[in-house]
Length: 394
Image (cartoon, rainbow, N blue to C red; front, top):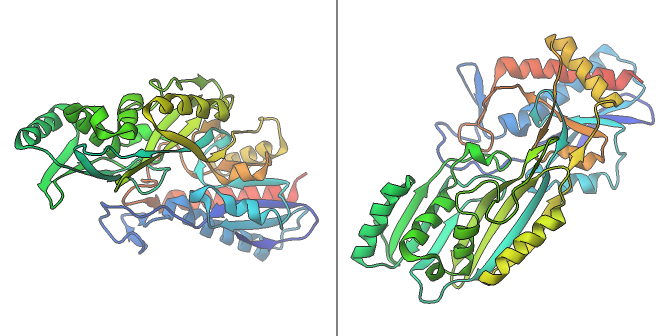
């Protein structure tokens, strides 16, 4: 991470963005890494998450400088490069740089996200089933997205192939079947979405495992795939694992099967779990571990981000509310999210604030990601007003 800075004073206020992105994936109508303007929109990977906001932040600093705004706090635009892979970049950055007194990250929605669910990434591993029908499986590229595609290779009889095709029609997934060198290649098509909102996607891996277990029986596939088919299936709330819970402040727990792979004699999968701010991530992991053990599945925590909660009656919330109302004429509502933003790294001194407006759809972590130019410029005005207040107000 690095920063650009304007102003003087010992205290620092900051707008924190990230310039790393998730993989492009399939299904784009244009080139994902070439910015393209069409019909009042800018298309490209990172436009909404989060390069657009990063560019706006830099221009906001320039506007403050051009106007010669007097500051009681230095204003920094901090740019990270590891938000999509656990945000360890800011941990390292703040070992050497001043922690902001006030901060926000435009990496969510308006109004003000003053509470973020805990995030738990759990890796599950087990040997493959020797002599079973499943010879290979792959799906998903990152933990924090719903897999849009998955593929399995099975050795089966002609009768089993007909059964698979019949089940595919009944189960409602999108499947295709092609002969391959190692066996029948089954491809499943889903719909990508951010893991914080798995209900907006369609998990190709989960649908493929349901098809395979329905045809061959879960035990023949091996312990890991049997466990996932039985204890997760197509669920998003963790009921079969005994994890289902919610609180009034931040909402329900969600479970996303983000990555799955079988190669040779080993199987591996990664779960992305978003849990309420009043829940305990350690207790959640213990339940997963206990449920996995009878299947011969090993569970380990890859990463955990603790929940965030900042009360409404703080100077930061007051300033951000004032900025939003000054530009839009409306009050900024407080809300919670299952997303993980840089706000967690700010140690209860920062929140997520913009750049996406309520009801705005921009295909985060999906094909054809975009920002609407008119709304993007409105965000830029709000960002500037917020930085002005953070720089000059007590």
